[in-house]
Image (spheres, rainbow, N blue to C red):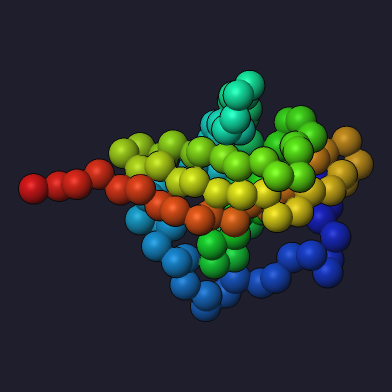
Length: 104
C-alpha cells in the first residue's frame, strides 16, 4: 500500500508523546463513540507525536470520536483527516487523552 508522500512525516528522533508506554499493537480494535457505537479492526501505519495514521475498514464521519483500548490503558481521540488510497481508507486520529490505570 502506498501513502501520499506529502502526508507522511518522518518520525526518526521524535518522542512518542507517552503513547509508547501503552503498548499499542500494529493491529488493534477501535470503537467509534456515539449513539450507534461501532468497533472496527485497524492497522497502525505511522505515529507522529499524538497523531496515529491508521488504515480503517470503513469510512468515518468527519466529527467522529474514538476509543482505543490497549492493555490496561484507554486512548481517546478525534478524527483529523481521512482519505482513500486505492481500496484502503487511511485516517489520522489525534489522541486527546491517555487514561492509565492507577497503581498502588
